[in-house]
Image 1 (cartoon, rainbow, N blue to C red):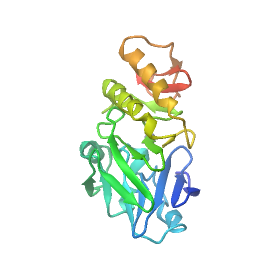
Image 2 (image 1 turned 45 degrees about the vertical axis):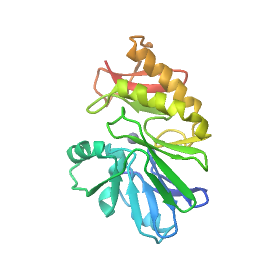
Image 3 (image 1 turned 90 degrees about the vertical axis):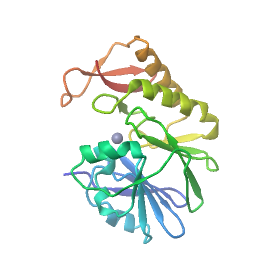
Length: 233
Ligand SMILES: [Zn+2]
């Protein structure tokens, strides 16, 4: 059984769709609504219909299973093309995949979401930046939960470069909305993750903590300044 979804209003035409352990976001425009990710799967559409009757397009921050679980219920699915292959491989559903690219700007109601490519967690991970409302949607890449950086498709060197890219843009936003952990984190979370990742890539590893028992035995948690990575060393 997956957790039920719950829609929580953040501000005008902008909702968190919380599934306990993962969250999606919903923006309501004039003639369509934009859903960011679809969670673990389950009865998502009826919860969205509580807040909008509009056609719903889906944009994926990336295509790990906890972000595309209910995507088959929607006809228009967008993601960066670097996710196409792993999306097809990781998931048994045949999703119609449409591309978004670095720099694309998606206008939905009062919001304008700019696509920022941040490979590392997955090859086609994206963040979404609204410069007018000064927020960033970060997917899994920036959060105060533990970032999964082991397994197929993870790239810790690319992740470091992407964190540097976000760090350089950090004067454009005041708040970050991640998919896991707290609903909001502050932009200094990027710098903390960048320092930790840079040290690990440079061979300086903090003393690891044990990962939950269901994970492979050589996966450990590496933590510094309140940010954490799952790594398989
Ligand atoms: Zn995730």
